[in-house]
Image (cartoon, rainbow, N blue to C red):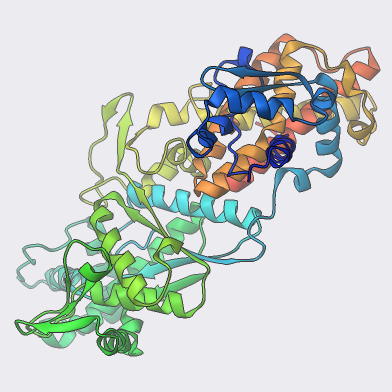
Length: 548
């Protein structure tokens, strides 16, 4: 539907001798204003130096065959052009959807362009918390969305296995191990205190006995760091797989050092004149590329800053030839964006092809009250604990009910409710209800499963039926806008709205009737709803259950 409007307006503007701009099509908030609307006249007002309503009148006057598709084309407000679709045009589009199915729902805008999405990338120093889970849900859904749109997506987890934090984990486990061996040993002041640290120490004691009892920390630290890091990474992978999230690549930070990528990147920046020495330190001239100030790469004591391997990591991405780089970071990394864009520009990459999505914190509630801290993690409730209580599907969906950069409250009691309060239950229940209808129609009434394409859709005359059809046909527009904005939560909103229309209709109208023609028409409508629900849920990475 939207493509038709875009074509008609584009053709009208060309007849007027106007080069068509990017034309926006939206759904009016008030249904009385029509089914679709465009503010194109207002966007042209400044260029054409005309009142928007005058431009709108000229566009409408030059629309060809408008009467074929629209019951009404009206100008409203400052210059909106509103379109009310003809029922017969709606039926025709629904029949096409039932025939072509996924071909209609998806549009190949990616054409095989390669995109690297890096997300989660949690330090392997503890279990995944809810913030990591939200980032995982967003990253996986975005990957599914862009893959469905024809992009060649690679999902990557950047393993922060170098630096002070993993060393601190090793020291923490070493201290607990010595305690298990019966020795008094001071615990690091800033060490990791969760129960998982003692679990790792017990694993080492079980596997190696007293081999490291009383060992010198400087001699044993590398082993304890590597063992602890590998163990935590293994647990992180297990939790992510249980969450339905997998990765194509796991990039080690330590490997960037070992293979000389960090050193080579520093030399590259020096050779281009983008790095200089001052006060015994090496600086990146990031202010030259739009950052607020220059940044240190190597401190005066010879130690690399966190920024140095991050640039090396992104140079590796750039060298791999990706069309677009998407990073999903915690909201506390907001200030890091300008310096990373500066680094990419210095590396010869179009910084506009880097998109950073920020993920805000999640507040966990139970019946509206904050949940106490986890016993296993020590400082936070883990993703695994929440999944075990409410399920992976519900957890993922709730993470996707808000924009990632907005604060999210996750109420465990609401998540477990089997009612309209629980949004994912409401959507999955809609799909399961339709499945039940089909089983009844085919098994008990003997209907041919291929009835949908041949059904007389003109019999769908109830106001609720027309509203449902219009909502179904809007899915391609929602999909395209979600792809363009890189915002999978738009699919979540849409599925909630579609389910909100379906359940009242289902409760009010019988679907399987004595009137066989009307039954087939209504089942065809149910088929289309189920098709769109399943498509949307698959993008979010959530199951579409046949029974509930």
